Length: 302
Image (cartoon, rainbow, N blue to C red):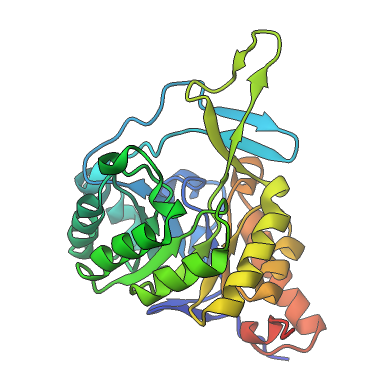
């Protein structure tokens, strides 16, 4: 039977429901020699702020059972560095490009969105709200639904591109945050970001990461993220990109059953760069075996 893998996320037409998670795939060209990036449904690139940013001091990544804890600190080339240095390659790939954006103030988010909206070849902006709000003492935007709404509204006002909001997992009720983002103008949601974590070297009696704290990703996060996607999908009708611990097609299929429209492969890219391609093939095989004509049929209804 014919299987239609295409999905729509906002105005973004994806040939299949698989992209990559921001921060795990560089800017696309780093992986081009290892896998056929043209087969992806979309490429989601690392976080971009207004100016270049060096990120945190090293060490800033440590492997733990079931995943990684990282405190890279959103290192990036800034808007101009990205547009001039990486977009020429990405425009040539021929798949949608989603740019993760961040800032330390509402105004910076809005300005980044406006500047990137003028760059040819960008299809969507993924708003990373798990960033410190410098003007309010460093608390994360993503843990206050009012701040999430404020950031999303500011971005929405400055761009006609598809806006996705990447929600944090460490909130009391994901449904509240999902509604806040969508009502403020987000076309879609990315669920979820990493979970705050810490690793201590018991012999040195000090934190392993120079930043002390980092974000947990990988297989250990997967059941948490599936629950968050399921709950958010009950609260909003906006498309959701599910992410967290996808290493095999079965992991991605769980997200699609839970209500996600698409999925993003993250930490697995560091281990096997071809994971995304195996996931695409696995989803198609699952649909054929279960007599499903399109991805939307996968969602469970209870």
